[in-house]
Image (cartoon, rainbow, N blue to C red; front, top):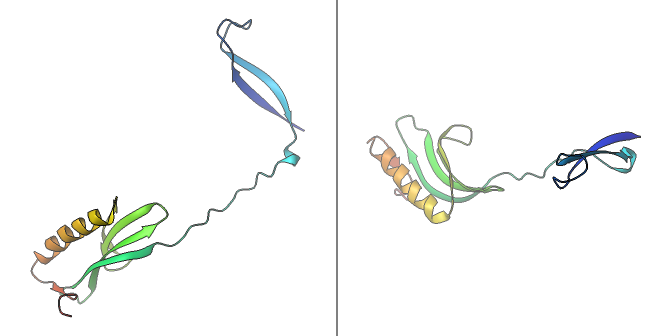
Length: 119
């Protein structure tokens, strides 16, 4: 049997003179299952592909909006592990606006080709 400290608030005019009561409480830990639960996490799912560009390195830069348990995220990069930009967004409209701004910055470099416009 393990003892557990219990702290509770009492009115200031109590007989103890302070606002804190410390008491013992017996707790049978055998009755409780305190095993850590693994959270179910799901992999991010691509919601929208905004654009794909190719530059001098012949590597494709992609900008996508992904949905995960925390919400929406705008990602631009060469792959999931080689991100150039990652930002949480509140809505698909906000994601599209930021994706357009990001594309304009990359296209201003002058050496990128829009793969989606070629189709």
